[in-house]
Image 1: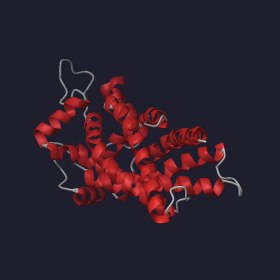
Image 2: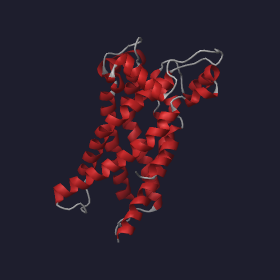
Image 3: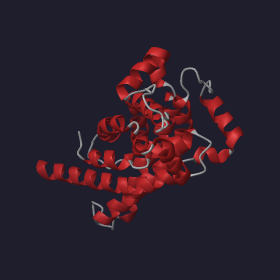
Length: 283
């Protein structure tokens, strides 16, 4: 695994809870309204629903993503140019990013549905001696499998596939393109400031392309047994737009962008540091 993902795992949780509720519920007028309503109804514990699944899975999935991306890009260059040392084209980077996004879905879908169900589950703080339907991440997955079958663990996976294929490709492509643009002629590696700026912008652009499908994915995954509202991706998108307008597809974008810039500055800084240390150790 790669050490850069631990920083990402901590940084990405900030604001995640509010993002899910804003995306899945039409009653919230914005971030502050969501925060105040959550605190009023559930107090401080309400902000930490699903945190265990997020902490455990984010580092693993991010490590998996970076590893798969580098290996796919390595093999693309070896097959196309006869040498893995050849600098990849933007098409190569896009293909590797798209394939990485597709590979992530198998691992990330159960974690995503547990996170969404836990974070949309409301428990009024004034009610004593009541047990929530989902008592934790593992219990949530068990209940979903029991009530909805194994297919339930992959509800919204088509939206997740659409989200990750193009957003991961955008993520890696924009980082590479910005680094090339900011690297002075004659230098092989970008400077520290270029890595930080490129990483932050890549994170924002990645989420900008991911947010519409992320909204649809979250709504489909929150749609549980006994309260099913959507029959599929198209139905969910059509109903959401009809009820709330096209702007519904960009719910949570501001929050995603705020946390994505600093988080991905750190991710790519440590990523580049690890790659450069690896190159030095091989010499």
